[in-house]
Structure formats: structure tokens, C-alpha cells
Amino acid sequence: MCSLILSKKEEEILKGEKGEILQLAMKILISVGKIFNATKLVPIKSAHISGISIQNIGEPGLKFLEKVSKEKVLIQTTCNPGALDEKRWRKQNINEEYATQQLKIYSFLRKMGVSPSFTCTPYLIGNKPIPNEFNSWGESSAVIVANSFFNSYTNREPGPLTIASALIGKTPYYGLLIKENRIETINVKLILKKRKKMDLTNLSAIGYAIGECVGEGVPLINGIKIYSLEEYKSFGSALATSSNVSLFKFTRSNKKTKLEKIELDEKDIKNVFEKFHSSNEWDLGLIGCPHLSLKEIIGI
Image 1 (tube, rainbow, N blue to C red):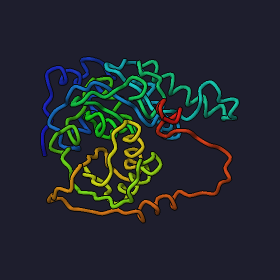
Image 2: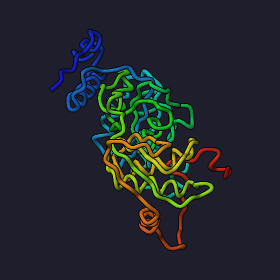
Image 3: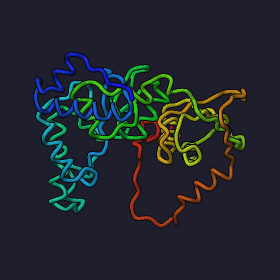
Image 4: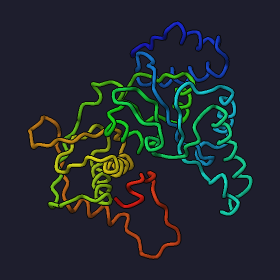
């Protein structure tokens, strides 16, 4: 078991010398750090908070947010979508008691200084990850893009930890923040038909199929080439949905490795489409999840 070493300032916060709220935040960071054998806390550039819907956090989460909202975040902090549209909830026939609780969540986040981004793609609205810098992000689809496309460093963190990190400006040093843990762990070979261009729907299906097979780790993928942010977003969000994967890599060659290898073909991709197939009759359509970029909206 590794011991977590604190700086003098961190010790002061833990003792309550900087107030009760920051003491609580520090205790959360230390508790998580000890679970994952972190040796220290490291400064972060940004935070992104997920799980801000009342059905996710309930009354205990609401009380927690009310308490910590007495302090301000120290770094750029964005948040995921909530459970309702704060301007149109009445037109959407949302229960007033439910809406009142959700609106309190929004209010507490604003009071803390959290940007009311309400998006699962914070990198599209100004919270852009910096290569080789540490962050504390929730939201699986955002985390995998931050790690894989931007080469920034973040674990897939729970909401309370990202809030604590935002208040302290630090996060436990473990998991994908450590370079040695970002090395590929499994070789994925795709045997697919040659296509002139792989559309985003097919990329999502391929990502989902890979996630179902690998489950976790850092897959090294051979057999497709993707480059744009939109491609990484579609592929990565589906991969993260069906697995605990938060980082993936591509290889441009068939170079042999000592890694365990799995193969996927057109049948595996077809199975994903069949799994999510529904009739053409529908009542409501949602665009996004994760939210679309401008290029996706205008169809480029």
C-alpha cells in the first residue's frame, strides 16, 4: 500500500485551516487517492462535472452541492447536461417539484463558479484539453476524447471527485494520469470491407463492438484510419459506452506485438446494428449524445 504524501498547504487544508468545505473536498481527494494507491495530488488545468441530474444524485447529492457551493472553484470547470431545460420545462410538462430540485442544482453550480455549459462535449465550447496536462473529468465520452484525441490526461472520475478537484485545483495521481498506465494492453485487428470513407454511424458501431470485446484496458486498433475530432468522438463515445475503456490508440501497420490479440469482422459490426435496430415508427428524435459539432450539424 502506497502512502499519499501531502504538501504543507494540503496538510493545512486537511486540518480545516482553510475552512470546512475545502477540508471536506481534501478528504474526498485523499480517500479516492488511497483507494487507488496514489502517492500524491497533482495540479489540474480543468474539471468537468457529470451526474448533475436530480435522478442521479437524489436528495443526498443536492445537500452536498448546497454545502460545497459556499466555496468557488479554482480552475475552469464545466458541467454535463441536466435533467430538464431550465427555460422550457413548463411547456414540457415537467413536474414542478422535480423541476424545483433540478433548478437548485443549476443554482448551486453557478454559485460555485461552474460554467453552465450543460454539455457532454466541453471541448467544443471552450474547455479544450491541453496535451500532456492533467485534468479531472467525468462523462465517459468526453474523457476518452480528451485522452485519445487531445492526448490530455484524465481518469473517468465520479461527480463528487471532480467537484472536490475543482475546489482544490488538484486530483489524485493514479490511473491514466501515469504514463506507464497509458501503454496499450490489447491488440485489436479489424477485418472489414474496403470503404472509400467510413461514416460516423459505422464508426460508432465499430467502437461499440470493440468495447464489448475488450471490456477494459488500452486497445491498440489496426484496420481503420480516423483523423478528425468528429470521427474520434463518434468512435470513442461508443467504445466508452460498451466498456470501461478511457483511452485507445491506432497502429498504421501490421507490426507484430506480444499483446493479446482479438479480431473483429463485419459480422460483429452487423450484430451491433441489429442490437439497436428499431422500427421506423417513432415519436421523438434526439440529436447528439454526445452533442454534435458544427460540422456534424451542417452535414460536412
